[in-house]
Length: 94
Image (tube, rainbow, N blue to C red):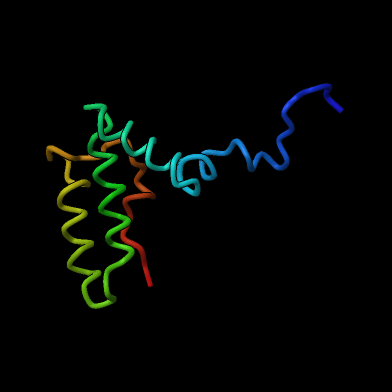
């Protein structure tokens, strides 16, 4: 094996998912980075709103989803996240 090298077992320990989503400190730092950079502030806000959305009661979700779409997915809006793909913005079915 590589001498003295850092092994990537399945890439898990260096993946974005692990570092920026599953690790509380990594997640906090990444969110702070997003929110502190003008180009990414809307992405940081969207992330916060999506996490809040996940906590919504079933009956509140449709209204919350409408607000999210209006705030982040409307071209020309102050917080439009234009970097998202069409697939990411598609209305989920089911």
